[in-house]
Length: 97
Image 1: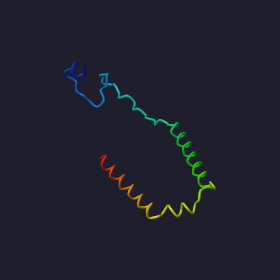
Image 2: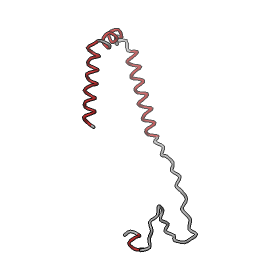
Image 3: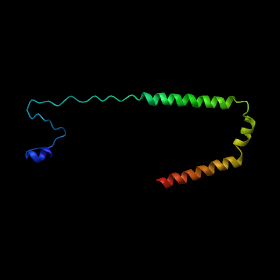
Image 4: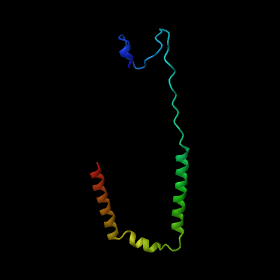
């Protein structure tokens, strides 16, 4: 049951004060404090440390043949595959909209 049902002289306002006296004041405004999400920060730091450790391990690995990576990374066939993949992903993304 809304206040307008029980009180025919009810006029809705932005803040309805239950105390109808002339000297009643508005309640003090709420001071919102953002929550601190420590778990997110800790998880982000752990993931960053793991990523750096993995990258360092890959870069310092003596079994990685950097000249071979350099030769194959920028070959025409590999670059064509990357651009084709990008086109396919764009079609899928547009199709999702």
